[in-house]
Amino acid sequence: AFAMWAGEAYARACFQLGFQLDQGILDALTQHGLLMLDLRLCPPAALSTTCSTLREKPTGIRQIVLRDGMRCFCQDLAYRKHAAAKDRQFGKYALNTSHLRMLMTALSVFLSARGQKVWILDLEGLPLGKQLSSLLAPLAATLTEAGARHLQWLNLSGCGIADRGLALLLPALGNSGKVLLPELEAILLAENR
Image (cartoon, rainbow, N blue to C red; front, side, top):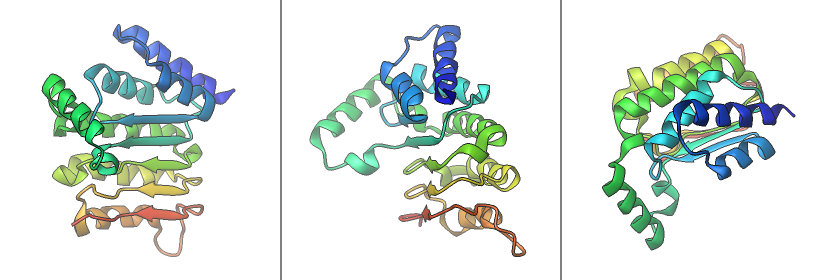
């Protein structure tokens, strides 16, 4: 029932922004509480509706997967061709710094209100290391303050956050003996030079 509210928030965002509803996104939200988007293939409308949905802070979103699909599918010729066509059409729209900042701000707003209910946060391949202070710092602060108590999986692989980014995340992982993410089973940080 709660996931229906997330689906309703997404449908409302599409209507308000005048964009066509993506049935795949709606189904994932309503059936699984999953907000999933490949930012490599993401058209401007999908990014706008995703940000609007997150800012509305609907209940029911338990899994957030916002990644660069090239990290997983770089060997897949069909995917690479599709990504190249999207690049020609939109450029790397959702992966540029200003649009990532918009997305990370919306994500932080959502996590501030509903972060305690999120199980999975997967941002693999998003170039958050480009501007740690405006892309990763708000997320790290929100995780620390909101206490995403049920977060089990945090994937920041390939985000280019390096040691400085990890230092920003450490307070969210716990301090002074206080565990802020008690259910965290995995934090993935591969390929973050």
